[in-house]
Image 1: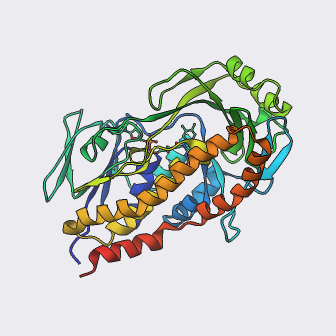
Image 2: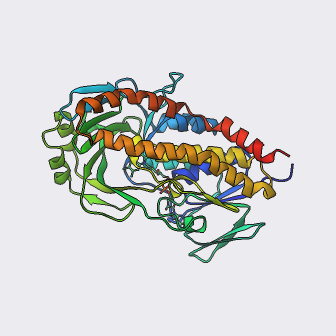
Image 3: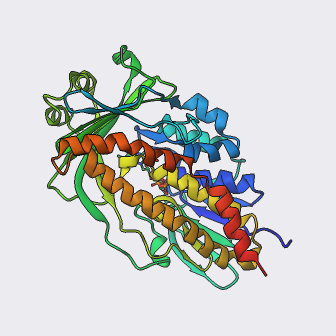
Length: 395
Ligand SMILES: Cc1cc2nc3c(=O)[nH]c(=O)nc-3n(C[C@H](O)[C@H](O)[C@H](O)COP(=O)(O)OP(=O)(O)OC[C@H]3O[C@@H](n4cnc5c(N)ncnc54)[C@H](O)[C@@H]3O)c2cc1C
């Protein structure tokens, strides 16, 4: 076969770094260009689930996930706002494989970067332009540099600079919700159970706690309504007193957590309607650049990992001339799955905010939600990506 295409990734977040690992594991030559002067992430947690962990394992990152993460297990539960039990939370796939981990975001970025060969990641490169011919794609950067590759993958997040080169700009959807989140060292909550994911569902609000960093820290997120429409992906320090007030009178266990909050960050919640297209010629989108979603299923990062694995599996079967067709096949494969998860996250957000007011109905839906999670976690994109690539290459 002719030589494999070369790939330039724009954006060194979770999506871009995992895609680089997956491409290298498939023998594809790749470079990552990140605007920041150093790789890093905010001080908050991210929940990593079996549908992504199976790919982290496949590229050799399984042991790192075990050592950086905090595995959550069978005590994981939904509660009413007063602390009474509603239902267990599904933490395995359909085969009973328990691979749900709480992870510090900075740890996750570090582990994804740790296995990349020296020279793959180029920091201080902010992409400002893109052009392509039938044969090659070219990205230009604010520092005056330019790179050419057979494929450019825009992994540059929710406010993607490169997305308009694929599809005309679209308006983000604001959901009238804000989240306050942060981390608390375990020593300050010595009796907190560090082996489970726990969520309290109440009127117009919900509260989530899970462990991170090998159970050395507790991650909390409080979601609440706001009238104030903010910039997409806007984040700023929040006032712990306001956060405490929002959950006053809820389960005393939430009080116990909130008493320990000295510093918290606010985050406005946006997503976008599923995009009609992700690829144009030799340029494609991945992760939040393609499909920003609400965090209510904890799937934005997990879906970006599925994207990366699908793309790597498919490009490993392409030569340079097959790239545009392969990228369209990647987009077809991923768009349907991701749209289902995006819409599922919206629905679940309304459910855990008790939006209909029918609390018995909400509880029944939360109990039944285990089936949705089981199917979500059991999905394996690799055989589907192989079949989709074979279809492209069929004479
Ligand atoms: C409150 C909240 C909780 C969440 N919880 C979870 C969870 O539990 N589980 C989960 O799976 N997901 C969760 N998510 C979603 C998840 O954080 C995102 O989906 C994920 O981080 C997206 O990764 P990404 O690499 O696509 O984008 P990003 O993480 O945004 O990375 C984009 C990268 O591109 C860089 N960049 C941007 N522009 C340029 C440019 N012009 N040139 C070069 N580089 C550029 C940025 O600096 C950044 O490093 C949550 C989101 C929120 C808001």
